[in-house]
Image (tube, rainbow, N blue to C red; front, top):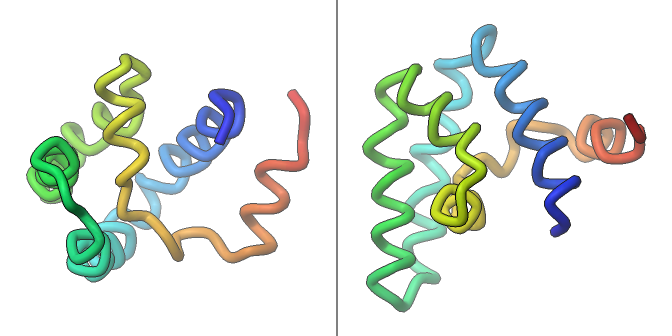
Length: 98
């Protein structure tokens, strides 16, 4: 995934977060066990824990999603937001060049 693609998805998620916070958090909490079952390293578990810790706190979650530092982009690789966007919505987000 390119940085541009990552930024588009992050922006769309942040835009949706205010209106659908509860749905997004519930979905992410359901996704975490599946992600966790595929992890093998302590660093991966630490990044997933960042998401787990941030989910109950809207401002912390927004901050983690928006984090474009190396650490933030690494955490994004384990972001538990599969299913927030339908395949059609995801395609629409990614096809538009800004």
